[in-house]
Image 1 (cartoon, rainbow, N blue to C red):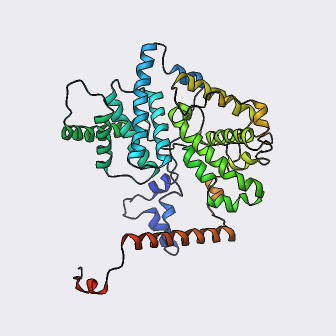
Image 2 (cartoon, rainbow, N blue to C red):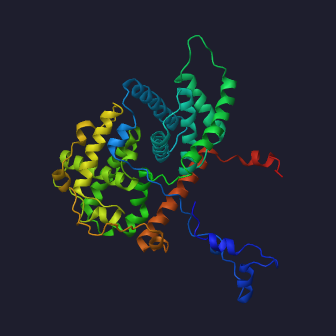
Image 3 (cartoon, rainbow, N blue to C red):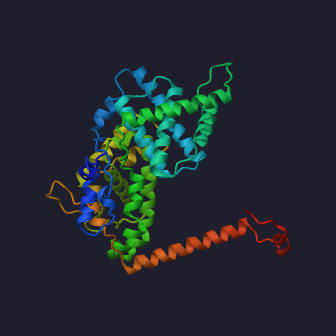
Length: 394
């Protein structure tokens, strides 16, 4: 990881006389503790290139048809594992998409282990890493129990051979420790996942809805939740295909919104279109009709090359430049480096307006009322006589 304050940390190391440069600075003026002297505003994650040409992604499968089928079988087992544990452990959607992203990155760089049990151990380590990165981590025993259940039901079991559950639990635990270290080291501790499911929630969060999107007309405000939900579904479904290797997270969110917009225009509202420079104001990437049409085409090629699933879009991805032009209205960007509205130096002040403050207060009040209501249902008030007989706790 890159720490911008590394020089200041080095300068603050003890010298021969037992005083640090920080002590000298504080002695010169009024002593004030400033944590920013020793720690940066943010920690920058490693930056690596994780997007590739669709032809290179397909070539990564190889040319031997028998080996391709074996690889796909192992990949399907891992993706099935993510899907089952997502439901079993009630994981967030963005944890599931993060696991799929890390899985395809690992496969592209290092291929998969030769056996399905080893692939399941790898998938478990990837899921744990995704869970630690995206949400509160679960106890290790929860992962182990769910993984053992999966291996008992869906994993390979030789005919006539009975698995020893207790022995399997210890093996799964040991493999989790081993593979978790391996995954983190081989991916260079790069946890900058660029998760599109997380990004779409951030871009259209309550903060930006009340601070940035105040100029959106009422008609779009009314129908936009439908488009947003369709885009969310699109993003989650892309997890089963290596689309995360095709484009970055912001571009994938834009792709999902445009797909939802084109579908909405075809099926419900022929006059629908996004406002002028809608994507330019919200996305730190260049969006043109040609780029998006090309991505739809490449997405379709990846679907054909990898998995035939119910969630596949198939012919729905045959979207032309003209169809995209009907739903977006973006000015041509002459600068090769697009404006990033989420740059830390721009947003760190945290400017808010009265509408956002009222919205936040209303949400806190609703949450408080719901918690109190649930608490009263779960813990009914005790009769006074019963309360009096209880011994005090120390």
